[in-house]
Image (cartoon, rainbow, N blue to C red; front, side):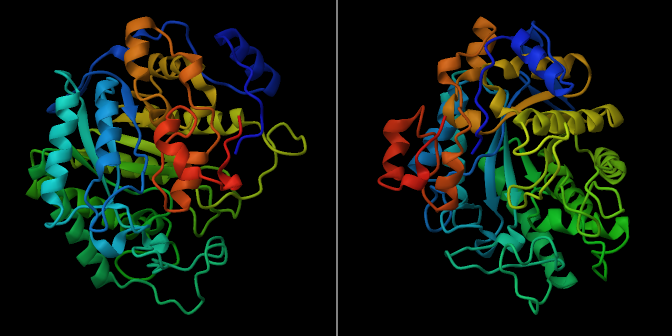
Length: 438
């Protein structure tokens, strides 16, 4: 949870804070560019607001969307998001990270079709792009509440932290071939259900993300760049071939914050300095395969190394440093690969000031989409307010208490206990560890 008090009232306050911390963030007063349409090949997003995938742990035991799942996406549709990126959906039951994670199979496909129909109906004539994130949880697999990790390689940084046994056998190349085929099958089901697009998830150290950094792995999926990126490239190509009418994209980690030889997007010197040479190369190759947009991610929620503060001080680093890194790295990717529309995010702490930073990035050519994650749970109609009034209401914004994440981590339906308390506050109950902090 963020312990740094939020004291920004105006854009001028943000400028003063950036100056004091020596942080560079793009920001402009006029946010009207966020209402612009964004062409994406054969598709068009009605505006630049992108609802990031936020898991709810509210699916049925089979992985079908539950009532709270549908409620969440109906609220986003009413809120005028240009792109609604549906939460992580496992491509097979064993790929789930928790017992009530969404899972798209032949058995649950009809329920997903009903979810799409309900979401489009709630959009009231608007036409948001609906993208379904497909995933395999890899080392974080826990399909029935018991850990069943699947790893591409052992990691000195992650194994001990997550209880991975030293003798756990890594997944074989043949099994990776089979999982790639499961992504393709799930993509076909998503197309039949009515989704506009699918996301081949490659971030946050889940299976495909871990393969990107598998420098010490042998075989077809490890070692050289061509092998480490093979599963993403070939899965995207196979989906494009078998479901040509579906927009294929990826939420790709551009920098996962792990040192080499485990890390991706990091310099190979054992430190933590970003190096986007390989992420940029992969983005260009995906563009050549027909990928029109990339949802950029930075870091991993499961690994938080001790870093020195950029200002040289002691204690907890100010959130603005992390925000500047996220916006900066996504911006570097956008500038390096302008033919791909890049979505940025990681700015929930900015609350009502965020549209000004997002618009600044767009106007500077350093982002095409303004992504928001936790804010979608707290303030699902934020885009509608910004488009209509030019501002977000400070009293409706996410306060970055992280209770939604704590609920998810304890396998409870996750939502905003501050702004949506009638629905989600009962999930907290008497658990004082889940009490929100402002």
